[in-house]
Image (tube, rainbow, N blue to C red; front, top):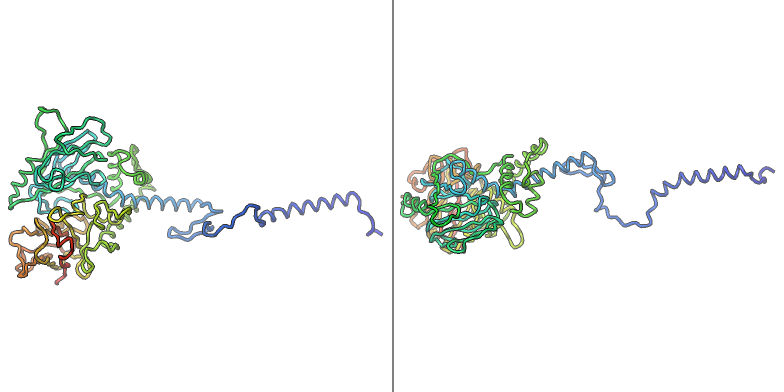
Length: 513
């Protein structure tokens, strides 16, 4: 029978061929489904899905690798976020640069020029939160030209800060000259020459640029005498051999001059930052900050020339950076900012550190808050001692927590006696510029030395803020302007113990209309 017949050679070969073909077809399926001999239990949290929905949009991946559209979104966002952070981290540097550019532009050049407010400060000059009751002297040094000497007169008060607004030394009352006056020698970074060891307070800063500013207190109303004393004892010059002639310092009276010392809030900010980077040693900042600025194209020895894409990103980044800084200042979420739990007054030095440190932690928002609102760093500002230095409290809101409105009437009462050995003052600032509020009142404030200032029957003092002086309060009045937001600084010069132990506290600013 056919069924019992043995297969021939051709049939056997056919069967083997079919078996081999089927094996080839099945093997890839087996390879994809069977686990490798060496395999892990992979948790889903370490893998990336093929599509992820984020604030940037949907990000897509193939076996974990981003597609072209995703890579573009990610790099645009990375450049944007670094541009925002460069604004927040670069602000101390651009603030110093803006001041030096500003005073240099009106004639007080580095290494020999001193800007001085012979008729005090007013709103025509743009500075961050200046005082209008004391004479200011401001100068910049550029140590790329070599060591420089600063001579200061007796009785002044102020700091020297470097190009990143880091404190170098105090001069005057809180400095090593202890208010007696003296000579300070500033040595450039990496300087290898001989340095005099006698007759100087020698300082070795980390940057080429130094910002010097000090106050000259007006005694017994003698403004001219205070100015003459400052000019007679202030000198800026390069060291010179004995007998080479008297160094000459060029003083520029900047009272009433219209010029700007505030760094930009638009994309010009990055040009200012680049100017700093090109002027200073490559390592004047820690590698992380140097790397941050380099990541957006700002690097020592290289031109800063963003292409159209990068320029658009940085224009957006600086807008968000500015909004971030303003929000941190005007709407702080740090409960440590408030001086008192039942008051709106807050401190620009959260934690009491002029370096914005809390142990090993850098208080980044506190640092941003300060440098967006003010200038000048010294331990004497944040760690004032009883009877010396100065203390500060800021108000941006009234007792109801609303922003201060230049078209409304407010009052604030300081219980007596106010704990200030020397004097106290209020000055008002424009919420936009953070400089003096532009009004018809030249001082933009009032202080305890103000002629005619009235005390209340219980020894307290009430100060009024409004567009027009309330009847009978002309000498206790600070003018504001409709359509303008404002803030104020309460300054205590020579603060006393009740300030430190908080047994004394100012009233809130209360709206009364």
